[in-house]
Figure 1 (cartoon, rainbow, N blue to C red):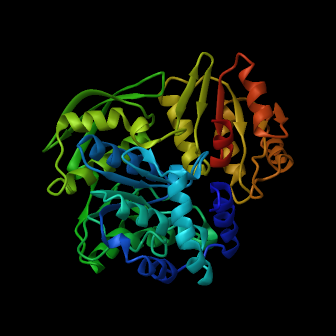
Figure 2 (cartoon, one colour):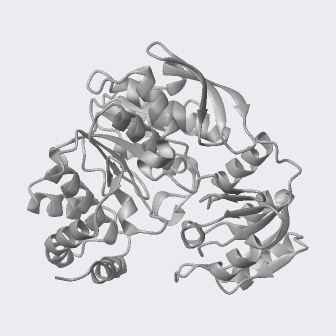
Amino acid sequence: MQNKQQILEKLYSLQRFGIKPGLERTFSILYDLGNPHEHFLSIHVAGTNGKGFTCSAIASVLMDAGYKVGLYTSPHLKDFNERIIVNGEMISDDDIITLAEQLIPYSESIEATFFEITTAMAFHYFSKKNVDIAVIETGMGGRFDSTNVIKPLASVITDIGLEHQEYLGDTLAKIALEKAGIIKKNVPVLVSKKQEEVLSVFINKANEMKSPINYPENICDIRVLRHNDNFTMTVDICSEDININELTIPVAGNHQIRNLLLALSALLIVKQRFAFTKEEVIAGLRNVRENTNYRCRLELIRNNPKFLIDTAHNPQAIQALSDTLVLHGHSETKWNILYAAMGDKDVKSILNILKPHCKTLNITKPQTERSMPTKEIAQIAEELGYLSIIQYKNSQIAYTELTNKDDPVLCCGSFFLVGEVY
């Protein structure tokens, strides 16, 4: 039997097949496995930003309501196992080895991609574990995303931003159309009213599929009472079914309120099949990080001096990070920013947003070929007028240096960077 490292190297090597649109390979693998994706109920979540918390909040509440819940998310921070979770427990190394050895020979013969095989592995695992429901996060897109083989109880679409434009299109409307591909015939869909520029795309797709379209703003109301200094929020939640006062949740920023609205609205849509109480909602939201391994999204991992870590890696997410720093009382705080980026990111826009918060820009290069060289990032920062720029050979050296100083640290820019630092 191969060990986990050998299996993962084999899986990662399949990235050579790149990103290939189409669902036929995923359907083919699943057919070969006996169509495990038809053996469990699901909620499907697409979007640019906010998918992680939306999925985790839904899964956490359902877990605390006593259901057996699968959770499939990507990418992982430190360990591949993070991608596939059942009731808070990551898939074991032994299960990864067994499933991969079963999947890889056929998958490789049809030139399936890394994400297609990983998705099939998750669905097969959820079927074997007899989950009551699985919360499934799309990868890059929607229409041709390998997760889009399921027929869920509800489709949820979070905020849309410019991303992966070489695959999804160069306008918000084009990207929204790809995300709208998860809307299934007669399956309720949830979209926010806030992004008016793409709303018509979702309405048209929902009408075409005869799918009832729902807006979380019409289902639930969340009022923020306090944005706390420790990057938590205290809120009131109100709907026809639940009223909760003074609940402190372990996430920060108004963008997370939109994601929480989507999550709670999705839960209310499926409540006839998956009932829950007010107390279970409270427990699920309080325990979301512990229940689902939801980490490093504006998470304070040290308090004095502060060390704040966030996976934000595109301009929309970085703007949400910037807004959140202000909301939580840090408009005047100057941070030692630890930053890295992948080669395809809009670094100029990102650094422009971060500049007012920065004391020193500390640039490093995670251990992946996709990383942008520190020299390129430094050149962009100089052009933007950054005065204090330090380049580090690797993340560990940067982390050690910065944690030995008395200044607050903000780490952001890449999942790979966060995974190496956390």
